[in-house]
Image (cartoon, rainbow, N blue to C red; front, side):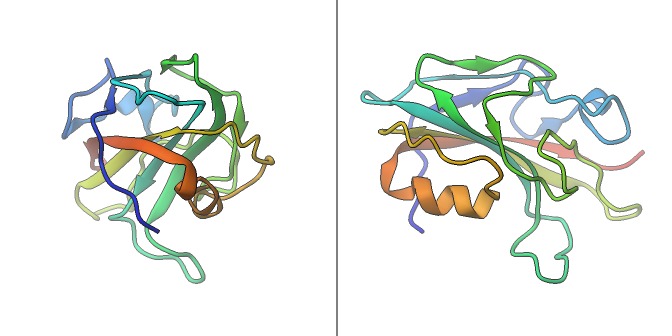
Length: 158
């Protein structure tokens, strides 16, 4: 797959780029997704995908790379933010086996992990079926991706 960062911007009022994700948004807290907002949307955008991935997580047998915490797709082009605790549109399974947000919770004594929140702007409304993994979504959206970027947060267990 070939993806490249663009001018699309992703921000959260909950934490800054490379800042610590508040406990509220983790598996040790309320486990609610942080509010997200995106700007600098490429012209021709018809839909969005949001994902959260931890590449620092130890690999699990049979898994690909890291740990998926959230995947939301089929987000309409008119949407520019998701509120805190959001659930809706179409969500795929996370590494916990649920189709909702599952917050950061690195293994005990595993140090600080980086959590990549991604936004992808697509030039098509793909109406993807429910239940797709992040890897399946990425495969389907690649030819339609107009722009993408990330917000990276950190977390270590207390």
